[in-house]
Length: 312
View 1 (cartoon, rainbow, N blue to C red):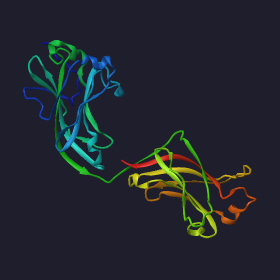
View 2 (view 1 turned 180 degrees about the vertical axis):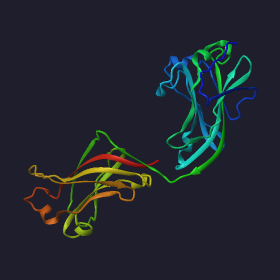
View 3 (view 1 turned 90 degrees about the vertical axis):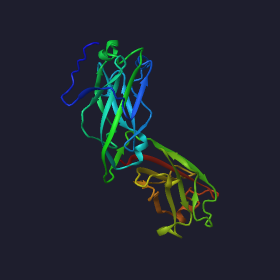
């Protein structure tokens, strides 16, 4: 057997055990093909330990995101199945294994520390799990017939909940979504609200709401005009969108269109923005103004999503 020399920090411990890993084992065949096929990261199926789901993550040529060279990188990661446990932190001690197929025992790599897994830190492990030169040396027994075996043991020490946090993300180079609708019989006062067809802006569906007899402070005197989420129940409770919007009634005679511009937060609990006194009914319906021709008006909107607020 070749001499095993590891340039580890003082925190990393390596030991030998005849006992296989308690919680999960993964056998990788045709290991060299991972690199040949540019597979930089391999993630195992989920396994359970301590009441949580986990994955083994292997970087066959080293974790390029951490600038690891000439080493195999191996990590333990909390699986996506745990994502519903918002606000939870899990503390665990874990050991990672690799099988010496010549001696039928395992080299164990660990640091003995409680590691804190949470929404912003789902992975812990070892950048320099084993040098590639050591792995590829058949005399060491770790890679035989292009096959190697890894494993994991995970011991959950404690868990705790914390207050929810939030993440606010501004959108660079936001897209302007423009939609135009022709509305017939738009002064039908028997209709309390006229709603346009749904349209897409960002990842959400929207619609325009047009009140020919007004609403709220504009009831009976003004046209009320709003941008609204088509189905606000699809948004998570604390999810908000920072939106710039233009609501426009187009002039069908000339280019003197009537526009209102606003910016505001829109959420499941505040799903619409606009104006209860957008324009007086008299001004809108005047034949000289060009907004209403033969009972038809043209509504237009421009929607720009500048930011998203969500929970962590």
